Length: 196
Picture 1 (cartoon, one colour):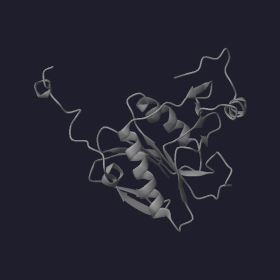
Picture 2 (cartoon, rainbow, N blue to C red):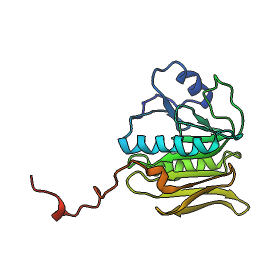
Picture 3 (cartoon, rainbow, N blue to C red):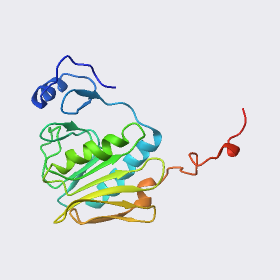
């Protein structure tokens, strides 16, 4: 849901405004966008991110943060589904300092924003080395990473290993979907659907 405003806000105006709100909002560079609820699949993938990524980073200099903390760009403010930073954050901070890896779980309603708009925003943050977009309806990911050749994307299939050398860990993609039943509810053909 997007809030209707008479004139665009600036990022500092938004950040001051959001502090007074009960609900979380992202800022798209012009206006607040209210955060809506997700699906069970989304929640399971988020949980698995915290367990798999966070667990592998225990005792290391980098830390995994969930969707309660925002990532601020030059013009926008976002709440990714997961973020890794190797910069120590103050315990009362509401923003991830110098994010290195950002995770978004795709949904039908946000996929184009995640693929295009947020991709550009996250690429503009010099500390971000990798942006991982996880499919929700099937096992798969689109991963953008920073290299000498620029900001390049790869598509990972279900048997792939998500390699993140910038934080020193690797995770089998299947692990991020553990406990999720993807047994083809979207693959039904008309003859497979029972008559009502």
